[in-house]
Image 1 (spheres, rainbow, N blue to C red):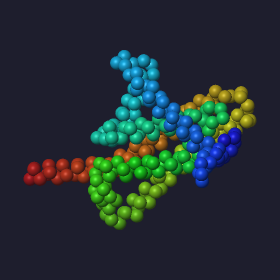
Image 2 (image 1 turned 135 degrees about the horizontal axis):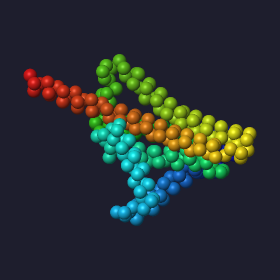
Image 3 (image 1 turned 180 degrees about the vertical axis):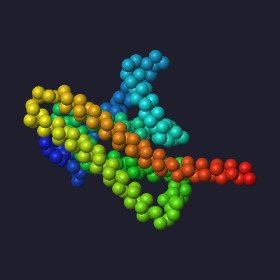
Image 4 (image 1 turned 90 degrees about the vertical axis):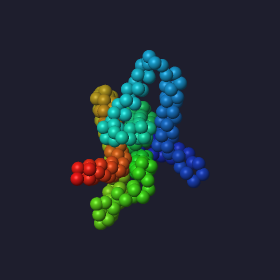
Length: 237
């Protein structure tokens, strides 16, 4: 993508499909993550070096974040949430590389991520509770709220995609405009702003995804608590 171009350009075609720079960059990020995981996992040591210590620290931090929101489902949610967070951090920061734009400045990429979160909410909910029990929570506390539940599912998915796209797009455009006006007189503050904002946006997207998934599991937890309370009251009587 050329500097200042709003939408990604098609690099080549595979049949009817156009492969844009966003797709190629995303493939590169996925390959880099896979290669990094392979290199880190093939030489694990009881006395870790710097790279293993950093990787363990990142995974511990993500695990603690999941435990704070969904303490009973840490191991089930860890692979998805960790992969999402790591991908977003790299995707947001790769815009710092000359000639490369972040995939998350493309609305199609952020929409795909938001749809993935949307599907994951229902996948984890059905996996944990079963299809009938999971769908029943859309009818509680009254079936009248069913349309509002469905509207909420759609609107929060759209908001998730547009929020990340808008923030990363505005960040890259602002950095480009400042560099065009001031040249390279102030590159370090711009780079620091880009890094901080990229990390913040990755954290917000990942945390919202975690909250949405935990919300899909919440109905089961509430029913179990309600049943325990009813059992306790019955024993007291």
